[in-house]
Image (tube, rainbow, N blue to C red; front, side, top):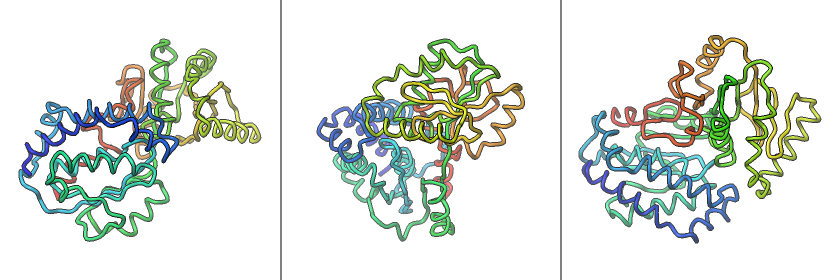
Length: 337
């Protein structure tokens, strides 16, 4: 396949995503109760609009030296499954670069990803030789793997001698100044709660100025009342809140979440960490020093900090084609193999 054929295949896939049946969405939900149908549709819409638009694809690939023929290089992809179709961007990058994708699916997201692979094959049968699902990865030329800090060590041990991109835990952070409008906080609340906060681009910690008034903040965030209808989420809320109370942590309690003062970027489900700051310049330096722990930073304007992966409130779960995880340019990695 040449590059134009690959782009045409991806654009056609975008159209197919509009027609995925309710039965398939419900099957994915029954397989993984965190994948509620509204969230699956949200993910499908973001993929279609941000990744599978012809003009965006052509602009994106124009800055890379991409082979116009299939390279015959086999790239292993170990996918995560924390939110619906989270591994799609890795697959897209391998496919558009002309390599063959050998995919190890996450058991949490196998229903949707298997369906996407079938759609590729339906649109262009040549992709049967270019997008292949396997349980074990061997005889590959490079690997892209996503997992936890524990699995990172495992991946390094088994695949460290290959050209690789191996990811571990990162989290989303927001910085507030106290000048945010109600609309700003509403947008930020989506960054916190989209996909139940399970994505690495979700906001898990906020920085607030000293003596910040949390009352208005909590009342706006608590508008996500639909969370009360999700048993798994509310079980986590009850459990994690009880632990925080037993530990006598400093908390502010809402109806569907609670804030806990904590220096860690990684928070539990339904729990948002916070820290106060007094010096913005000092905070900028701290965030940049912690770059390896942070996936994205959200601020009111999207340009408050000197941080490469900074976006405006409401935009953390809407990455563009060149918003690469961990700030590592996957396309550069793939085209230089």
